[in-house]
Image 1 (cartoon, rainbow, N blue to C red):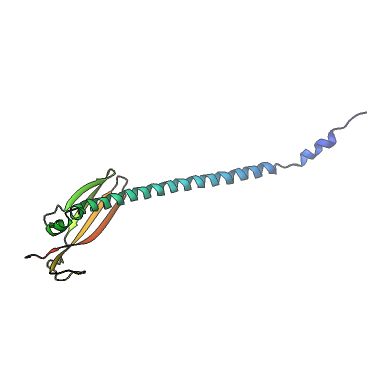
Image 2: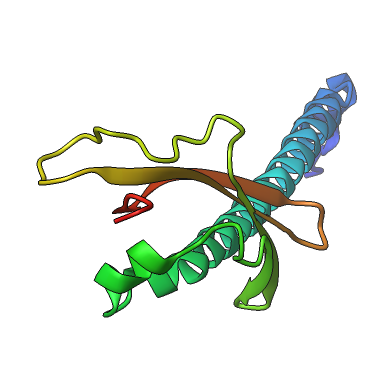
Amino acid sequence: MTLSATNTITGLKKQQGIVLVVALLILVVMTVLSVSMLSSSTLEERMASNLQSQNAAFQAAESCIRNTLAPVNEGQRKTAAVNYDPKTANPNIICSFNGVSANVALTIPATSQQGVDKLSGFGVGVASGNPLIITSTSSLASGTSSTIEEVIQQVGAASGQ
């Protein structure tokens, strides 16, 4: 009695290697997807960093405006508002917030309303109003910058009273 093994091995000769081609194609697709996801996550990281830098620059500029207006807004508010003379104030102020420096510039518009009769609101007597434009600019080493402009109306007693 002899056994023949030729019948069982003959089925292997008909394969053409298509599984190898499909596996390589799937690997190429997965590689392309992973590279695109990596570049997408890098872009998201840059966007988050830029947003954080922009927020730091904005906070520095806003903090500098608040520091500039601090003497007017402190406890001596009544006398400070009347005695505050924008012509003698330091027009260029440099301050910092969390290590970020900011510059503040006080500007009195050419159309200053000195000695205005009526201002909005209720009161007795004549008041003067001085419009002030406060501009604060902060910039980071990365090139991110923020500029804030605030217009305030200084109200005090009219000159001559």
